[in-house]
Image 1 (cartoon, rainbow, N blue to C red):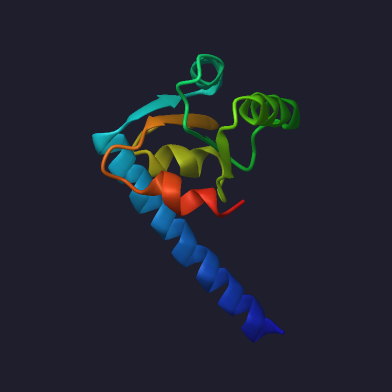
Image 2: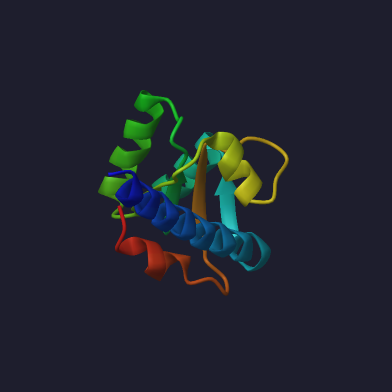
Length: 117
């Protein structure tokens, strides 16, 4: 029913706002890597605690990141937005397809997102 669909989208929107505000706090107080190459390096070196993937990342790149993350037991969060949205959520004026969180700083993003996805 349309009412149920509206409820779901409202819940998703609220969840999205939550992750966006946490991301803003991580960008301010934590340590992150932006971009595919840098994030891959941080996964390989074992520094990444969490990986965020935009929903329009190329499938091969997405599966490669997921595979490395699985080997290093790193949390992977599929961001519900494209690379433009993820870049904006990071407070950047460019697109971000993949980002790695090395240190969450004052944010509780690692605890909050580990249960989801």
